[in-house]
Length: 187
Image (cartoon, rainbow, N blue to C red; front, side, top):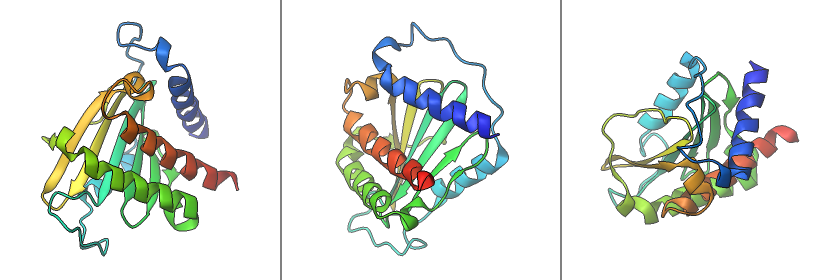
């Protein structure tokens, strides 16, 4: 399992580093890894979190109190979860992840809060979620949790990384959370 987790993280790093060379026409769908039930459970729990349970009182029904960023790379998925409380986690579809990084790292906590705050400026780019599908390879799906309901937007991973789409700043804020989560494990 650790080898799969390492492979996923390397694939994410390579994708972001070499994003100019990646396009839908140049890539083929990778053979998918089996998706772990624990991953699905953790992801569902994050997507189902409500503001009251988190002790939050958004000022507007459409104000995000959480953001989930699902990324598909190399046949696997990674999910970054951030809440306005500063809680931040990373889940791997192959099993495992890093839970509660925002509680142990002030930097991860601050990055999670910035990610959620930035999501508020993107609600106009999102639409109500019809289901909660996982992303395809080299796709990123954002889910913003609001009291008015779950809203979503998606884009190609390479376009996000290269700043070619309006959601790119949101993606980069999510990458900052991911970096700080990973750094908690290197201490």
